[in-house]
Amino acid sequence: MKLLENKTALITGASRGIGRSHALLFAEEGANIIFTDLKENEMSESLLSELRAKGVRADFLASNASDNAQAVEVAEWVAKNYGRLDILVNNAGITKDNLILRMSVEDWNLIMDVNLRSVFNYTKAFAPMMMKQRAGSIINISSIVGLNGNAGQCNYSASKAGIIGFTRSIAKELGSRNIRCNAVAPGFIETPMTQQLPEDVRKDWMTKIPLRRGGLDTDVAHVSLFLASDLASYVTGQVISCDGGLAIN
Ligand code: NAP
Image 1 (cartoon, protein in one colour):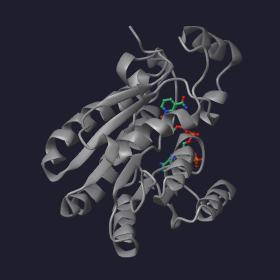
Image 2 (tube, rainbow, N blue to C red; image 1 turned 90 degrees about the vertical axis):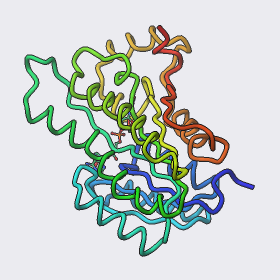
Image 3 (tube, protein in one colour; image 1 turned 120 degrees about the horizontal axis):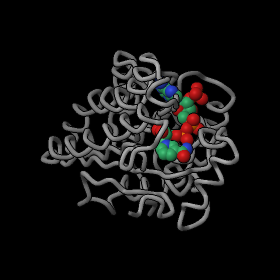
Image 4 (cartoon, rainbow, N blue to C red; image 1 turned 60 degrees about the vertical axis):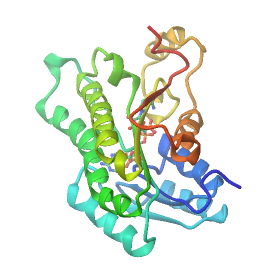
């Protein structure tokens, strides 16, 4: 029996990177997949084909996760077309790095909207359905910089720290309905987000990682697979780092 057989999962911002890897792994484990991204493009089309080729039901919805009304529309669509949602992965996230003195209010707000408000939007939109089911696993993709901070990323690290407070609160609020809520805190993961960093910054990160390599998007997806599955049925309100040991103090 596959780990996610008969479950339906929704992953935000999943056309590429860590989200895409979640969609593919969860499908391999038998889950039906709904994934979102800002726009339909070649990446979303190819992912949809790959998912369906694995024999599961899969759908793509173009939707901006930072927009509350669009998240509500997605939840209504899922209710109508799938009837339930077992796993929600709040993955959509972006960076807009700068030192505090140079950071614009617009860049602060943008990061809060895409990284943190989106988690509120989707959790709120799907909570009623999960409460009725008396089951659900919500996984929020935070970051080790949400735990430790990072110079030049005060907006991003604040949004990711906010996700951790939100995760623990929702775990307490919805636990009595058998809804679990956990966060994964990836370290330096090799995705388009980190590949755009200058070579000297990348090298500096590598020397600080005890396992001496950047993480793979599949490394993060494997942690989420555990949290999504019934193997984690007594795990809630936790933040699991997936960082090659980077955040060890
Ligand atoms: P990525 O490759 O840049 O992928 C992010 C995805 O989110 C893209 O497909 C992007 O769409 C989508 N997206 C952006 N804004 C959106 C919105 N408003 N609504 C819906 N979708 C949106 O990033 P990644 O590295 O896979 O990161 C995934 C998550 O892991 C993020 O939350 C990130 O903060 C977190 N994380 C990453 C790392 C790392 O080292 N990579 C470390 C810690 C945490 P477009 O293609 O249209 O932009």
